[in-house]
Image 1: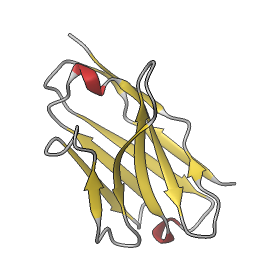
Image 2: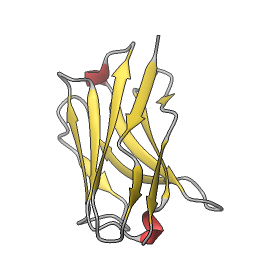
Image 3: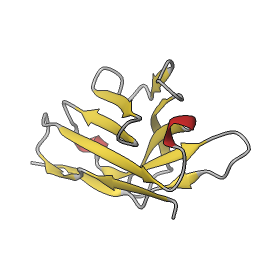
Length: 118
């Protein structure tokens, strides 16, 4: 069964850090471009970061998170990570991972809530 399972969200104070994980099941993870998106209340979904297959030769970030967030992948663990440092209240959102490959369906996780508040 195809699944993307996110974890690692929670409540953190401004300036704090979280590491999100997204573990893949049921498909060939190493062949997929992996992306992290977020959706804040009342806002459009935003692409936060992506990392190409299989080894992450290309990585890109939204301007709003550059220098603070780091995306990485571990193909042996079928997992993509998003290390988030120096978190700000405007980073509050539900974070989703997706897995994409040309000619194949895009898979989505269920999302994990990140709340940055004092």
